[in-house]
Length: 144
Length: 144
DNA sequence: CTCAGTGCAAAGGATTTGCATGCCG
DNA sequence: CGGCATGCAAATCCTTTGCACTGAG
Image (cartoon, rainbow over all chains, first blue to last red; front, side):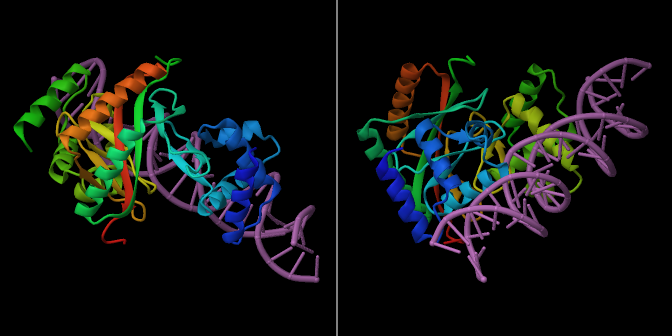
């Protein structure tokens, strides 16, 4: 796992008044290694020693600390990924059949356009602190 | 409810080999009237006579027939809305606190740009029949 | 020592399903 | 008439929680 991520995570947990325990480090490591949103079953398969309840509890802690983000796909599982500032700004390709999620990025020009549009909408509607999320839905090559 | 929607729904159900029953018509009517994604509790509150299981079952039938679409917000409830071709292409503002969903549209130029970008990504990744979904996340005026 | 973190098992809660009955086609 | 739709209640299954125990600080 990149040292920088590790240090940032440590700092954020400290700021939230939470410890950086072995289980939490393991979770961050798995998510960093995988680089794609992972469901709890996938995480548990990758880390046999981790109790299911600890996975849920710690991911929740990491979410509140701003380390991981919840991703909703098309199947019954919530997925988790490291927040964008630990990795990079990206979006998701979601397979409508199997629910698998893949990352992709948009050209920076389009991102700029989107940000402008988003802040315009935010002004018009009275919603504040608006972030955007762009998902593409289709069939992955395996399910096509 | 607009006659045109009613006729289209009837046709799609027929094509799926499904009946257009009273409950199904009531669901379409409520969703058309509301014009915003609705959760099951909201739907049941609007239609007291409808059994919860019938709501779930019929919305599922309507989804398979291409009449309604599932919308995932930020709370624990799945929401439902009429598909875009029965209404219009739009996106969602999701309140990160209460989960309420509101519609908004983007300027057509931006939509065009997005469609081009989406098809480029689709070509690169091997995903096909890709549609896009843009959600803005923020706090609605009531929760701000 | 203390208290947060952990694992196990049980509870919770949205959604699904089994089954007997009613009604549309 | 026959089969799908319906309502009720029970079952499912992801997720959360209670509790006793362990380990880090």
